[in-house]
Image (cartoon, rainbow, N blue to C red; front, side, top):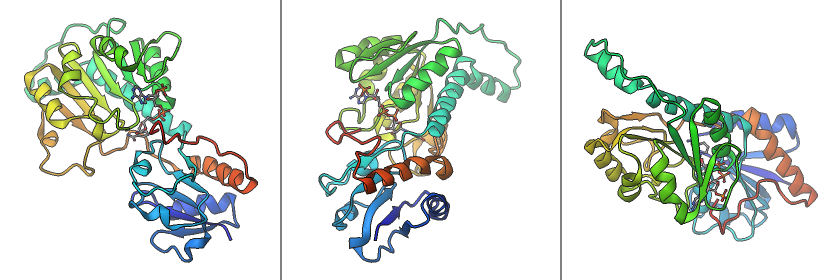
Amino acid sequence: MMALLFISKSDDPRAWTQALKALLPDLEVRIWPDVGDPNDIEVALVWKPPPGVLSRFPNLKLIASLGMGVDHILSDPELPPGVPIARLVDEDIITQMGEYASLAALYFHRRLDDYERLQGQRRWQPLPPPDTVGCTVGIMGLGAIGSHTANRLKALGFAVAGWSRTPKSLPGVECLHGTEGLGPFLTRSRILVCLLPLTPQTEGIINARTLALLPSGAYIVNCARGDHVVDEDLIAALDSGHIAGAMLDVFRCEPLPADHPFWGHPRVHITPHIAGLTRPEAAVLQVVENIRRVRAGEPIRNRVNPGHGY
Ligand code: NDP
């Protein structure tokens, strides 16, 4: 019997069971920790599975992520070797992420943070007009989300630069890559948007050294993973005025602890990891397609390369 095990503290098991059953009525869905016989589990649908759990199922044939990033799976030191991992590549989430990055870029570019401060002082004070074509938004990561977001921002009239691991070519986007491309990419980026996966290479990539390379008065938008940012370095750069503002959706510790300095910082804007939310009714289609492929012995879609870490 093929059973699917659902493991997540933040996704709704009922909505997912309903969505799966609507398409695969014969699929048995079990909700962690009610595993039943571990031999039955052939598919694990997961968000932040507790380390070590996925190695307990001898017949596991597919690990499917409930989100687009897979750092929450690859961080498990006891991951069963050889079991394919599929990530979501979901148009719905990609659209939401593009909206979030565009909103953040426009918010800072049109100085809404400054106008909110002026409103607090009941001051009517127009600031100089914006120069949109002269404002470069730098996008770290030109994957499914980054390339979509680059096109969105270009359509809004911004100059757009992008940075990836391997060379990329996107029409109308200045594409840089690799370690040697990072410096030139950062020096151009008035608004830096992080859309990288979290890997050992990208952990802490927004730090004192990289922040210093951004133009004075630059803005940071992080809607990738909290561990991309060295919190103390960002706070120091904000306090010095070198970085004028930050819009943060993700944090090293989530929920962000009540005593974290980000909460009360006048230049930090916080959202609770909502930039791109998975809607079961949209995302279920690719989970079901991969289950079909596993059953048919075909290669799965959107297979993660654990060697790359994303
Ligand atoms: P992809 O895997 O499609 O793309 C990743 C991009 O990052 C690629 O362009 C890749 O380069 C680049 N990259 C990876 N490692 C490096 C490196 N060491 N140096 C430079 N560039 C690098 O990812 P997605 O676009 O699907 O998603 C990106 C991330 O967004 C996810 O991993 C997740 O963490 C986050 N996310 C956050 C959400 C939220 O709600 N806040 C929702 C959804 C996703 P190359 O093209 O050369 O491979």
